[in-house]
Length: 67
Image (tube, rainbow, N blue to C red; front, top):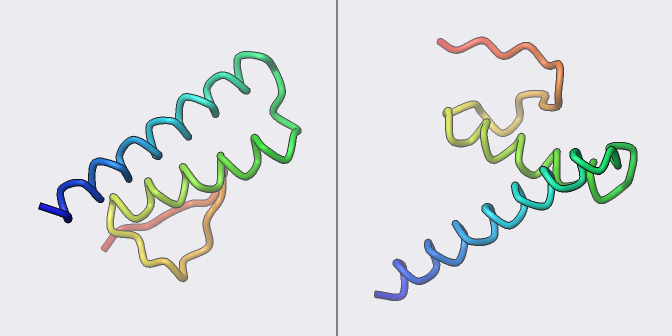
């Protein structure tokens, strides 16, 4: 049962990060440190979701090749 709770908490944190990233983008505050940190966090989560190795270079504009 504990694993389910931890998974839910992680999903909630990811949702909050995406929501805040969206808010900052709408406000045009894309040069702030908070935006850059959230952008990196969300981008890395997407890479993990698609099975990209963690040691692969990441960041907006990076070309990713899947096997």
